[in-house]
Image (cartoon, rainbow, N blue to C red):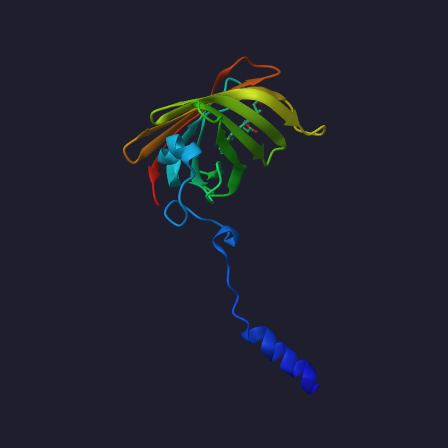
Length: 189
Ligand code: HEM
């Protein structure tokens, strides 16, 4: 018994030391930004909007809120999360997580994302100044996903001061490429 108590005490007294790369999140400043992703540094931080606008020919227009976060851990990639909620009820809606990479020595970017609806995709495109445009190169979908199947996405992220804008268009098996989302976020962190 005594030896068990001693063991518990000794475990408690061990100071848990987290190494920088073990922490859950690190935003710019804690570890140097990798040179390769410097052209994307304007995305870093937390962005929030209560005023997103959704549209598509097959559905009713809607409003939504969303928080985006872009951070890095010193590796040559940016990690992101996009969490949207219902404008009135605040219930969680669309969610997406992933990474953004740059082809070394170019302005070519790849956005690798997984969505709560069961889509996983790789988009590719370019970064020019504080604007990044991408479109789907590869898409995977659940065999039991809800129709209509998404065929292609295209996005534009553009920063202007402390405002970040995202435009997203979508092609499904029933509808050609059409605007689905337009939203402007304020920088919150
Ligand atoms: C890459 C991101 C997204 C994809 C691929 C996507 C895909 C889709 C698809 C395929 C539909 C059905 C269209 C149809 O029936 O023809 C849809 C509808 C809808 N989406 Fe998105 N969406 C995305 C992001 C979002 C976000 C961020 C929101 C914000 C909350 C959102 C809210 C909605 C709503 C409210 C509908 C209508 C649902 C209904 O009427 O049942 N979507 N989306």
